[in-house]
Length: 581
Image (cartoon, rainbow, N blue to C red; front, side):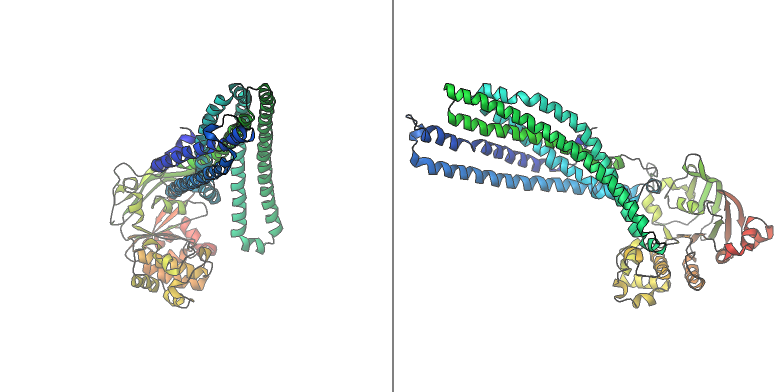
C-alpha cells in the first residue's frame, strides 16, 4: 500500500467535513473565475465606447462593476477563510490520531525494539515526522483538488475566448510534467536524509544535555560542542542539498511558464491587431493565463511538498509496521491474582543471533519464596529477571506462572501482579504523590501515606516545601539517591503485588543508607515471591535460596550456608571481599 493511501486512511473519520470543505473550495474557484469579468466589461463596453453596449452599459454603471468586483473578492475571501480553517482542523485531528497511535504502539513494543534504537529517534518520529500527515493533506490532497478544478475551469473559459491561444499556452505542460517527475524522486530521497540527520542531531543534544554533570566532571565541554557541531553541519549540508534542488526546480518551472506567457502575448497581440480578438478579451485571457499557470505551479510545489512529507510519513509507518516480538497468545487469560509460583523451563535467550545470554536455565520458585540471583557481570542476572514481567520472551523454552506459560496470560494482567524496584529508581518530573501512586493511580491519600511510612519515606517527604505535592524534578533530580529509592519502594508497597522483582536495589547507596534501605526491603519482601539480583552477597546470604549464574548457565543453587559448604562458585565469590561489600 502506498504512503498516500495509508495517509488517507487516517482521514476516513473526517469524510463528511472534507466533503463540506471541497464543496466550499468549488464555490471559491467559481468566484475566482468571475474576478476578471467586471474589468473586461469595462474595457470592451465602456472604455472603447461600444456602439452596442451590453445591458445598456454606460459609464454610470462602472461604480456598480467595481462594487461587484469587491463583493466577489469578499465572498471569495470568506469562503477561502472557512475552507482553510476547516482543512487545517481536519489535518490537526488526523495528526493527533497518528501521534497517539504511534506513541501507543511504541509503548507496547518490547524492550528489544527500544534497546536497538535511541529514544530520541522515537521521540523525533512522534513529534516531528508525524507532522507529515498534516502536510500531505493540507498542502497535498486539498491543494491538488483545488488546483485541478481551477485548471479545468480556467481551461474551459480560455477555450471559449481563443482556442489557439489556449493550446499555445499549454504547449509547455509536457515539459513541466517531466520536470516535476524528475525532481520528485530526488526531493523524497533528500528529505529522508534530512529527517535522519535531524533525528541524529536531536539525539546528540539530548545525550549531551542529560549527561551535563558527567561532561563538566571530565571537562569535556569542548568535545561535546564539537560533536554537536559535526551533527549540525551534516544537517546543514543535507538541508542545503534539498534547497539547491528546490531552487533549481523552481527556476526551470518558472522559466517554462514565462516562455508560455511570452508566446501568448506575441500571438495574442497579433490577434488583436487582426481584429479577431478584443483588447478586453486579451486582458481577461492574460488574467486567466495567470490562473492557469498559478495552479500548475502550485501543483508542482505540492508534488514536491508531498514527496518531502512522504519521507516523514514513511518513518512513522515503519514503526507501526514493526511486528511486536512479545505478543499474547490467542485467547490469553486475564488474571486477577496469582499464588506466585514461577518456573523457568529450558530457557534460552539471546538479543542477537550468535550471542547467547541465557542457556538451558531450569529453575522452580515456590510461592512466597525469596530467591537471590548472583553471578559475575554479564552472567544474565538482569535478563533472567526481565523474563518474568515479559519485557522479553525467551528465545527457547518457556517461563511459567502457577504452571501456565506466561504467553497465555495477557501482559497487562501479568504485570499487575508484579512489583519492581530497580537499581536506579525512575521518577517522573511530577509530584511525590503521583510518583508513589504510579502503579495504582486510584489509591487514596491515606494509602499513599501508609505506603510511604512503610518505606520510611514519610518523614523526609513531609519536610519537603510542599510535602507530597512537591515536584521531584526531572528524573527525580531534586531528591537524593536514597530518597528516590525509598519512593520506589513506597511505590512497590502501594501496588501490593504478590511477586516482587529487585534488581540491584542497594548497589548505588552508601553502607549506612544501604543498611536502612535493606530493613525496608525485608519488610517489603515478606509474604511475596521475591527475586533479588545483587552484588552484595551479605544482604542476601540468609534468603530462602540463592541461584548462581555463570556465562548464562545456572551452575549452583541452594541456601547460603549450603553453597559455602560446597566450596563452589558462590563460596569463592563470598570469600572475595569485593563482591560481598
